[in-house]
Amino acid sequence: MYDVIIAGGGPTGMMLAGELRLHDVSVLVLEKEEAPPSNVRSLGLHVRSIEIMDQRGLLERFLAHGRTHPLGSSFAAIAKPPPPGLDTAHGFVLAIPQPLTDRLLGEHAVAAGAHVRRGCAVTGLEQDTDGVTARLADGTSVRGSRLVGCDGGRSTVRRLAGIAFPGEPSRVDTLLGEMAVTAPADEIAAVVAEVRTRQLRFGLGPMGDDGIFRVVVPAAGVAEDRRAAPTLDEVRTQLIAYAGTDFGVHSPRWLSRFGDATRLARHYRAGRVLLAGDAAHIHPPMGGQGLNLGIQDAFNLGWKLAATVAGWAPENLLDTYETERRPVAAAVLDNTRAQLLLMTDEPGPRAARALLAEIMDFQEVNRYLVEKITAIGVRYDLGDGHPLLGRRLRDIALQEGRLYRRMHAGRGMLLDRTGRLTVVGWADRVDRIDDVGDELDAPAVLLRPDGHVAWVGDDQDDLTAQLITWFGVPA
Image 1 (tube, rainbow, N blue to C red):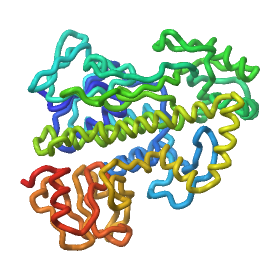
Image 2: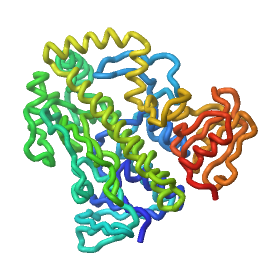
Image 3: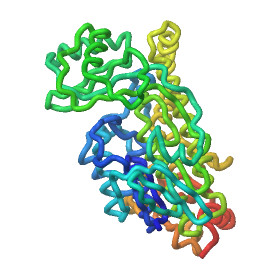
Image 4: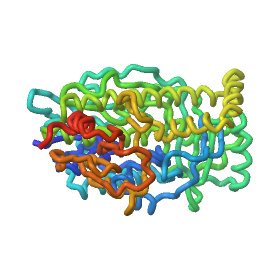
């Protein structure tokens, strides 16, 4: 019997597996596909996900396989320079294709001790007071104390757990793929620039130096079979409809479609079954937030689920996963709805988009939207108090080294500038650091394993109360 079974071996599932293994939780990942997909659905990582990789010692691996780009604002495809003074030490975007992200997180999870079985689709599940039994397509079954559905927008786990998934169905489809072209690059760039003055869901861009382009073009309608890939002829027809040419596209590596369906799970937990990533929320891809949102779900859930398995979790700690992450997902759904509306070709949205472009010249508006898309503006509702409370803490300089290098083990942390606070009784769960330096604008802060600030102050009794709230009774 495993401590945790994870259905779905994508970035959310593998991130969660790695987080659980930091705390010696036995993990089995079940992935229905025999081999990792080659489709490049996501193109990169935003600031908060980059910070997460740094907090776990993974960033150097990701930097070696991706390319960094200066951080800018592009809400609803409105290009603006980045606002000054963003609260991060990682002010860039990391361009890295999703298959590489999948592979790096999978290698990390396996190296940490997670078991992975490919070609294993979950077809049924049963809960009881002691655990969850997952039935597999081959007729076998496996058992775990908890099961987490990270199995995508069409989640089997969500359906089997009886969790509702309300929202809106797709009303527009977009075709997506990678393929060769015969048209010259300068001609492609000129035509694309002209088409994008009237249709922002259109684009052709080189994937590298091998002549393969990523093609995005609106579909003619909404597909009845959401699982069916488009044909190359469909892509050619739509390119001609919008650009007057098909650019000589041929030899596709892969073809896919995506819609604008927007749904949010009614709950993130049903007994011993939980949801994370696209299994809990789907939305249009505007702003490239989907993969990042799933990774951040896993980062929030991992330490809480591990504490529950280990037996030291305070009462209701696992419930905070839903109360914290579901509002974040709801906000992402809303901002993608708004972006998609502003990117349509109708006169009203075009006028609203032009007005927003003017308003984004105000730096505070620009900063607000950048923080929203990159998720560095997320603040969990931990009550009133210091401005840091509920926010993640950026990578500050310590007297020796930097903060994130001390967070690789996924433990809680007390940053103590007073020199007189203690975590005695919680030393198996919380580290104390007193060589903090001057970048921390507070006497002391208590960080959760996900880097969010749980307490700010200088009083030992207040600190003790928050240690019990987040890390249970003292050993």
